[in-house]
Structure formats: C-alpha cells, structure tokens
Length: 114
Length: 112
Image (cartoon, rainbow over all chains, first blue to last red; front, side, top):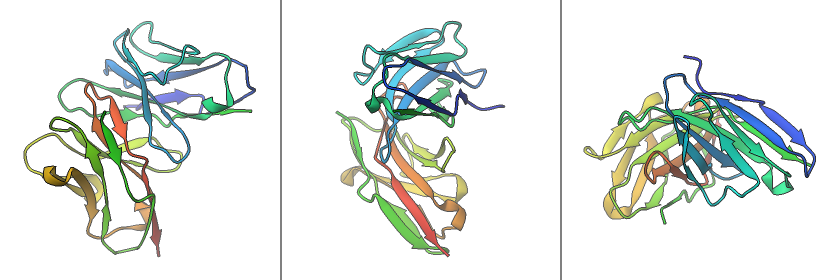
C-alpha cells in the first residue's frame, strides 16, 4: 500500500500562469476527492469523482479550475490564469464506498502564486 | 448549511497531562463525525469517527471522543499526552458521500 501520492509537493508560479497537479489514489479506491486548505483553516471540499465520473463540484471551484480523472485512476487538477488568492495547499484523498467512510489523504501540493 | 466550530485555535498542555479539544457542529440529521490529525508536512490522518451507536468512540493513539447530541458536541480527549501528539487537530462532519466540512483546527503544543 503506497498510500495517496501527490505531485509536485511544492509549486511556485507567477500570477497568470497555468498549473497542473497530479494525484494518484490508493489503487483499489474508486472515489477521489480534491480539497483546498489555506493557512490557518481547515480543508474545504472542491470536487470528487467516482471512477471517471465527476459527481460534484463545490461553488469554490471557479471556471478557472478543472479536474479530470480520465481512466478512473489518477486525477489532475488544473488552475488556469492563477491568482494570488489561489495560494493554498491542495489535498487529494481517496476512499472505497464500503460503509467504512474512511478518507485517505495525500500530503498535498503547496501552491504559491507570486 | 452544515458547519463545524473548534473554539480553541491553540492549546498548550504539559506532557503527561490530560487533553480535551472541543468541537461543536451544526447538522440537521444524525451526523457522521470525524477527528483528523495533521502533522507538518504530513497528510491528514483519521483518529476516530462516529456514525451511530455507542456515543463514546475509541480511536488510534489512545484518543477517544464523546458524541453529545444535546450539546451538538464531539469533543476529543486523551488521558495523558505525549510530545509526539503535537500537531493540528481537525473536527469534521460528513455532508454525504464523504464530502467533509472541517473546523478551522486546533493547534496543540506540548510542553516538556
């Protein structure tokens, strides 16, 4: 069990640039979630997938954000035209809907927009 | 809308002392409640969860939490803390399909 892995761990970008993050969930998990955590706050739900289907998107997810999970395995989160307010830790989590309701989180990608 | 409040932003306790971290929630139905711990550079780790049944739930690392419906609370406790317990602790409620609403967290510092 390699756990949930996220890449990169850190990303520094200039305002207006596009960035893409990757998440590899635990292999047998068919649900995958993205959360965002800003400094001093708890994580906030952004979106989630069941297999390749994106089932829900939070209102926090503006049009500049897009997430995909093309083959129901890894997922990418892209932010276009980054703004300083996008600076945050982006967390990925996965789970199996087996009634256990346990989310396994990755270590996150820390985004800094200059 | 569901919400979670953790009234204490930062708590300091001495090693070996007891600990209680407060959590209050707002949720219309019977809540699914969680406590997670986050250490620097680490992902969130589940400590314990409450779905139904016994209102006192046991978790990992010697933690326990008690669900009190009348007080809309789910406080986390540990009888004797260790230096390795220093971390950020988050209470959360499930909105459904494991879409969690988290509190803002309580940072725990341990004095030697």
